[in-house]
Length: 471
Image (cartoon, rainbow, N blue to C red; front, side, top):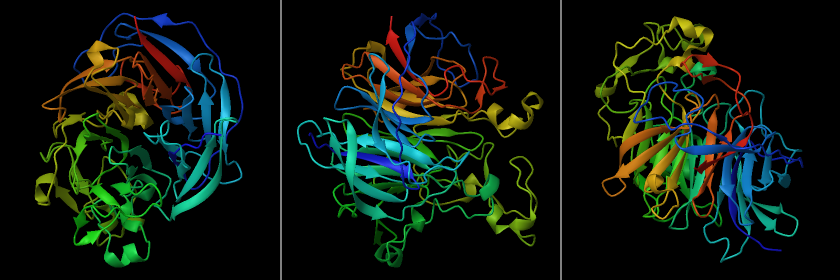
């Protein structure tokens, strides 16, 4: 039995697996299109010189996929509550971890089995495995003989959870630490509109001593991977050292290290301004006071929880019509320290019409934001020449993968090419070891923009893993 290290985020505390058989379909070719654009659809045949093949189907909302130590794709299934091993050659699926006896997913929620990370030394330094669950972090061991995980040992408990904006991406850094994103839990919007947004709230010394992680919402955390403790070199913020590495995020579903150690982040915007950031120690990225750049374009912070004299509970939430009792603050009114994004998507002027009549009740699908959902660094040694030194970014609403060309020592984004537009919600990417094959996981259900930019509810490849190969 080989014992390897992994980390996996689940919410609140479980994963499940079933054994099924996937299907493989013939590749289909499409003509090259695309360009540096952030607009809506360009058509479903836009493969930019690649072929598309369906590797596996029948997955229940695959959230993260990685290339495993066994040369299989390892996928978390958010609503299926599983960790599934997928043979990339045949599409056959098998169970790696089954926690069906623990409740982790609520119907329609953004909870469930989420992030997954493999320790970079797993092949040369076999050890225990780790599972970072939404309310706890457990260690698991991987049995390569049976292809399963077992022997859980708890590392840390009590992390923030909820039904919205979980984020839950994690990566092992080149420093050996475990990085993990926690969203703002959907505070100040929709069903959570009366909850205060804590993305700027920093933990106190008393909270850290009590292991009360309430202030970790809207943060990127950095943990010691062996016991979940706080690294001694984490930043001091307001005089307190905690797990917090950076803060001021809405829903960071993208987290990735470049080969030079640069840490990239993709954060979903509200109606505008999806962000790509370079994360720095102790950095403040502005949310909820700033979305995108601090430019006062189309976004202001409406603090529903502070409504007065009419209490928030007596109001009906709306993204478009804000009552006078709700305090409103322009981006430039906030004078806090702020680290700008290196690229935004869906940035528009204040005169933009957010109430497109063709969109009806699904008006949010027509908003200019893309709902970026993951980042994958494509190294300079990869087999696809035009992808080298780039980030690949999946999107949910836009139904496309973007290639983000890096520049200035890989610290900026100098170009964005829209790839593989289809009526799919693209969730995550895994690369084969040689970089020749790009595997993309899709949501099982949800809303997306069609080829004309209008809302659509029927997905082309629901709950699948797709393979894109250069022609």
